[in-house]
Image 1: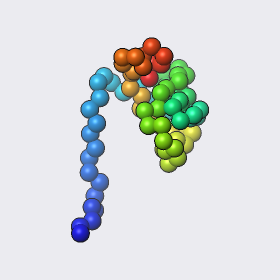
Image 2: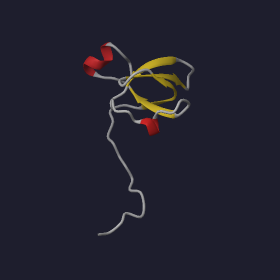
Image 3: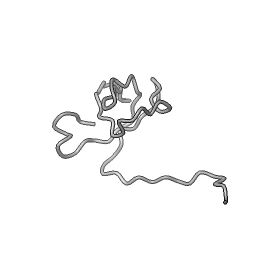
Image 4: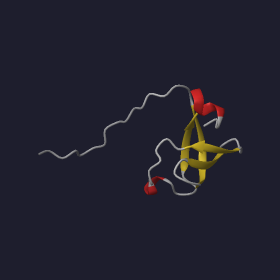
Length: 77
C-alpha cells in the first residue's frame, strides 16, 4: 500500500465570486457570524452542519459565496 506524500490540489467549482471575511462566531450548526473585509457584519449559512471544530476558530479567515435560489431569500451568504 502506498502513502500519499504530498497534498493534491483541490478544486471546487462555484458559481460567482467568493467574498473574504473573518469568522466572529458560529452560533449553531447552521449559522455563522462573519465580518466581511468591507467591515459589514453578516450572518451566513454553514453548508456543512457538522462540528468542524478544527475549522471554526474565532478570527479565522473564511470565504463566503452568494446564496442562490431559495436560500437567498433568508440570507445573502
